[in-house]
Image 1 (cartoon, rainbow, N blue to C red):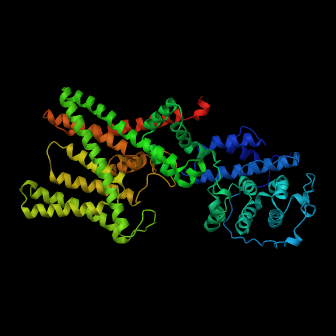
Image 2 (image 1 turned 90 degrees about the vertical axis):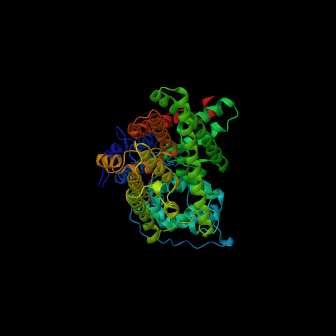
Image 3 (image 1 turned 135 degrees about the vertical axis):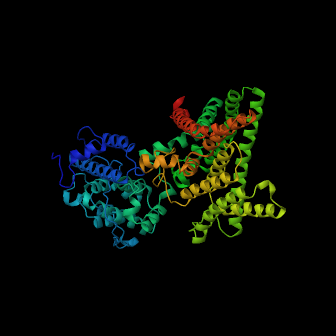
Length: 567
């Protein structure tokens, strides 16, 4: 058997690219190797490398299928993707005439199901395959089921150069059928062309055709088979099983996993999206159960963080009772901040609904909506400069009224920011102000302007630390390399905090500033300078990020198996 094929890449090269140590036509071995390589080659990290990997995988699978069909014509089809990456040309299917009931084909008039059919019958053109499938669908389910093995062999025999055309024609055929699509037919075609799992399907089919094809799914859902998707989101399914287990010990295991995984868990649930969650087998009640458990875990986390702040404060002050009072004040402030941020978000949603806008509606910001937050940045800076000239405590009644107007206008201008970004900005600004030994209006104003500007850089998409789409639960190294990391850690600190608050959740940011506030409070009570507390911000953030990564990995290990397999 010839081990090379004409084209830009040889078969041995393709096998090596997908992770095989030697050439193979074993589909199970090919898929295992591809799944392993896929873990380190992701579309959101390097789209070009993923494209080359996927194309190599398609060619190896196609070669293995053709070899299997030549060696064993009786072999049933094997599920797996086999789509080349083509140009997005539009191809129109010329449907075969619909037979009348009187002229419906008999079983004897259907294409031969003899496994020893000659190559002229096996190698059908894309148009001939469409006409044959339409004839089978019109004949009924039994003839279609009987013809599926031969149909699978005919699809495997289609040259790789014609797979895209065949995929588009098959999609158009299913869309144009005047009856429900037989589930077994859709399963066979989807297994062969990988319409559901391959992210390129929407590109080569076109957005309109792809949406129409998804609308024809039998039963509305297709199970997830992509190894990378199952690896990333399968933990949600297993977690819901542990939380709903009958044994109390199993449920406690699920609660512990939720506590360890932190805010990254509900963020991962949102990132999956409702369609993917349904295809994974999660029902709305499972979603609510996970979110409710995560909310309870936030309360437990607040208690644990209060204890940690008490220990650190006691080490600084040396007075246990005084440290306990500071820790309780910090915890109350943290809880109040979360409630205030949630209330601000609800107020914004209510204002949007009063204006006839629903959160689900895609909105394109106008020029004025993009510019007004930057006006707030300038107002912050001007207020700081004005406060340096005129002390706040000596303002007249008119001055206090003007300050109230300023605060109200600023709050409304900053409302379009997501809750996590608002919370991270306020906490960072408060931490910077508290860390100063003596209050300075100039410092407070310019710090607010700096924090607001850095947050807007992220919210308006001026810089994105990660490429879209984001699928990983935890953030990776920011895009741009060491230079970007250096800028984010210095002048871009507000952008860094806004990004981490969005990706890691509020718990990491809140915990960081609880530690900083506790140390600053202990230093203030001891009449010592509070600037050393600023060191706790980067140190505390690094510790909290490491703890979250460890907790996420530990929670996934706890959820590695379903409750049934664990027993």
